[in-house]
Image (cartoon, rainbow, N blue to C red; front, side, top):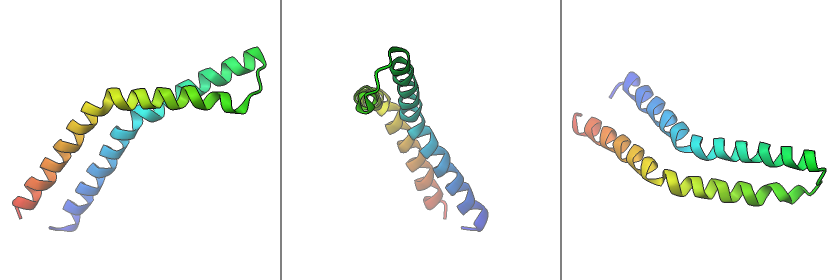
Length: 87
């Protein structure tokens, strides 16, 4: 295995990490901004109010995207196993 193959595997692993984390991060960002906007418009200055909707929405997104995440990780593992077998 040469350096180019190692860099290729590393790049694929980083891209997989981005794909796995993106749905939860985007939902958490959107919910946080919406709740912050609602707090600003209603002048409610409770600091802990944003955490409950954000945690619930990220958890629901995790449950919904779990099959996609499993498929992505299984495909990546198959690629790694095929590269190991070809050595």
